[in-house]
Image 1 (tube, rainbow, N blue to C red):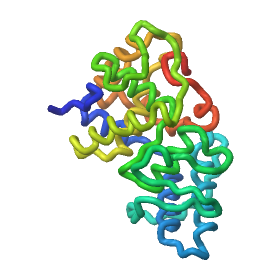
Image 2 (cartoon, rainbow, N blue to C red):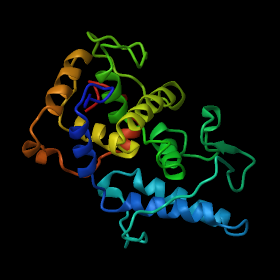
Image 3 (spheres, helix red, strand yellow):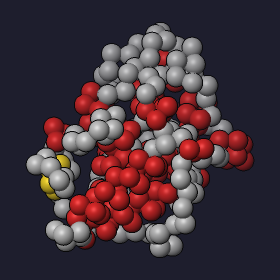
Image 4 (cartoon, rainbow, N blue to C red):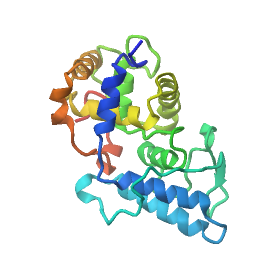
Amino acid sequence: MNQTVLGIDREKIKQLGDDWSDGGLWNDVLWLAARFWESTSNERLIAWHHLVMAVGNFKRQPNRRLQPASISPNSPVAVTSCLSFQVPGTTSTICCEIADTWVFPFSGAGSAPTATALLSALWPGRHLILDWRVLAAAIALTLDDGVLNFGVEATSTESVVLDLHDHYPAVRELLLKESQDSGVPLITIERGLYRLTQMVNGKGRKWGTYRRSLLEAAATPAVELGSANRAPTDGPADDEQDSGPEAP
């Protein structure tokens, strides 16, 4: 079977994800995450500060992002991480696989997109960035089988308020399974879903109609995908938006 658990052709979601581009900012974030894991106790607070600020910059709207010269190498960055760590300057411990610990103890990290961006930087391949676009795609594409039971009805136009604890663990589990089954990297699936929602205007639509539109967009021939090839638009404004057909 060549379809994802979301009912989309795996090659298409991979193509969309591979075409995603942010100008290299995320590669720099991964490089800073690798530096954090490698840092000594004396360097750890500074390395953490640099990582957090880079993630904050990444999550800004594109026209507000700072885009300095890249610091990451041209080759992929290998992040060697531990399963848990104590957040520098605090007594809080974050664990890769324990959902109750996925709370960063500082201002601005409470939103799901920012918190999950930090998790994804620290543990690439085990975590993804969950913003309203990825959540909306995941909910809509699983309406028929009820894999994500968030109380959404196909006939509803009501938005879903993105919440780290209510939504992230279930979406992560679903997309991790797809990554393991297909061999497509988790980050590529996440980016593919993000890009897919850029091809569909769901504002004011019923969830069921939005789902059909996503599936139709996913079936678009490769040569027609160029219109969706633009940099991500997630950031503070998107972080505050609801997820679903009412979101722009």
